Length: 34
Length: 339
Image (cartoon, rainbow over all chains, first blue to last red; front, side, top):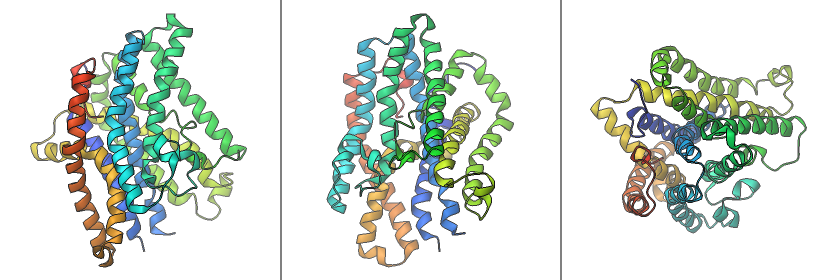
C-alpha cells in the first residue's frame, strides 16, 4: 500500500469503535466492581 | 486492591485513542492549512467546520444533562469546566472534549504565529515544530507542576497543561505525508510495531494496579503517585495510541463485511455515544429499571445508549453536517470524515 490513507479507512473506523467501547467499558462495567 | 482501581485505566486508554485519532485526522487538515500559508479564510473555515461538528450536539446534550440532573455550572457552557473540576458538573464526561476544543482553537494560532515568525520554515516543517514544541513544553509543565506541587485545582484536567493532547497524532500525520515511503514502511513493520504499541498502552493498566501497592510509589520516589503518574502517562500512552492509529489504518484498510458494518456504525455514532451514555446512566439510575440490580441496569444503559446515539446521529448530526459541508466545504473530499 502506498499513498495517502483515506479518512474512510476501515482501520480508522475500527480504532474509533475501539476507543468508544473502551470509554463505555470504563463507565458501564467499572461500577459493577465488588 | 479494589478491582475497579485496576480497571479504571480502560476509559483513559479510550480517551487517549480518541486524542490520537483526532490528531491524526485533523493533523492532515492542519498540514493543508500550513502548506496553504495559513490563509485567514482557510483558518476560519477550519474553526467553523470543527465547531459545527462538535458544538451543536454538545450543547444539546449539556441542556439535557442540566435538565435531568439539576446541576448547573456556567463554565460548562464556555468549555471552562476543567479549570474547576472539583465543582459539581452536569456533564463531567465532557472533560476530554474540552481538551480537544482547546487544541482546535490554539493549535492553528500557534501555527500561524510560527509561520509569521519564521516564514522560511515552510508549512510542513512548521507543523512538526509546533507539535514537537507543544509535546516538550506541556510535558515539562506537567512534570514541573507535579514536582513542585503547584497549587492548581485538578492539574490533570487543565487543558492548558494538555495542549499537546492531539499533537502526537499530528506528528503521525506529518510523518505519513513527509515521507512517501511511510505507509509501506509502516505496513511492513506493523506485525511487531502494533503489538508493541498495544503493550505500551496495556502497561498503563498494569502500572495503575502496581503503583498504589505499598512501597512501590516510595521506591520510585513518587510522592503522590496519582499526580506524578499522569505526567508520564499523558506522554507515552498517547504516543502509543498515535502509533496504533496509523498502523491499523495501513494494515486494515478494509475489514470483512460484518465487522466493517459494526465498526462503521460505532464509528459514525461514536461522538453521540460518548456524550449521551452518561446521561442515559443517570436516567436509568432514576428509573425503576435501575433498581433491578447492577447488571440489568448496565445492559439497559448500553442498549438505550446505542439507540439514543443512533437517533441523535440521524436527527441532529447528519443534517448539521450536511449543511456544514454545503456552506463551509472542506478543501478536499478525502478529509470529509466525521472526525
